[in-house]
Image (tube, rainbow over all chains, first blue to last red; front, side):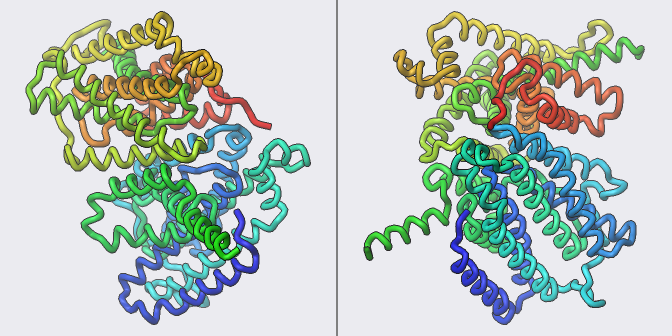
Length: 318
Length: 294
């Protein structure tokens, strides 16, 4: 995971300006709604990308972390009357704990045990949400979740939520970038290049991987809580295993482990089903087809194409 | 109904679903041994097996004796296509990329099945007329016997194939050491393709025999496939005997668990078992999978 420190900050600034300007152009609340969902996906995908890029593991359970963030915060704030910010924090702590419990035993193993464990975990969470209907509302969902408040103003409208969620998404990207330059980031980069060498110079590889996994799950949880307090209702279908696959698709389409790649993956794939209504029917064919072609012919995703083009340009000018 | 009768009822239904999990788990093992990847499209092989039986028996009116081998052949063909057009063609040889190719293929297959067969549940006629049978207090249908018998037959054929035929032994050699096998003149690529064909055939068989009980639909195999995967992990991933033991134990555990506690959480059992095995004994009951790294 390498973005070049200075360049990344400029790119992030450009994105922040685009984000600040967008509401001037987008007056339609429905389109704002799509942009808001996009920011939520950017947040989850950024977290997932940390895991893929640093630890080299893929999770098929991020929809479950997203769902836990949404349901736990939703239930605590409405049924138990907690302050939504406090319930968001509580959900994040719970998710961190769960991720720790899954990560510690599985991340020390080679192979694809994390994929298997997170997959099983996602299925369990979906079934629990469906079956524990006295707490979760079952298949019809859980409604009446209060919005988040800032200085006494509730952030209920699409416009107000827009500022909150994009701030969160930009901060999420910045934090992920800083992590790359941290001790943990460098340790994991070494691990990525040579596990044996990294372990030999004393990088606590397993512990670092667990940390990144927990952080990545917390990203998903925070996005889930924001989702719940924005829409006011959550349904089990939003958080099933297929959404986990969709999230991984966003990461892979953009380019595995590239932060901007993940951003573009989410930005490209989020609006598609909303823009093309007919498309909903063929969603599986479309997602499956795109992912399949990319993985076969362009496993580095859009970011890989970009890198190849700039390399070619550099070669020509040299 | 007395306690004993109930128990034998649970055991009968546990062995029936357990057979399906065992067939699916064997499919996972075959592909894992040949390529070291988890084939997430295994469940779709099961769905297609059931859907083909619906079409061949119902719409085309073929006799079961023709329809079953035809369905198995079609799905085996899909397995070969998955290898030839996707997994074997991928530019990257990274395991993670290859696994996600099967995830993508699964999504694509499901989408296509949905377009061809629609979303509704389709009734598949049983292999022989439904008459209730009784044994040790358990009531069941001839279809239960077909499932147990066909699964047993498939296992016997596989054992013979892997121990007494040249091709079967070549496949085992590739699983143990692909390089050495290639040096001995074994066409490893062909063996990998054969593994996909066999995995498809086993999936089709599972789908063809279970859908008269469950009905067929575009996604009927997804959950069965995932549970078959849990069964393979339970038995020891990549271990053939483990797949059979894991499948049957998971089926029994599910049916007895649902009987003893409640059927509400029946579907959770397999995945809780999956997590427990991964946490406590990742090599599974009979050993398999990979060693710890560094």
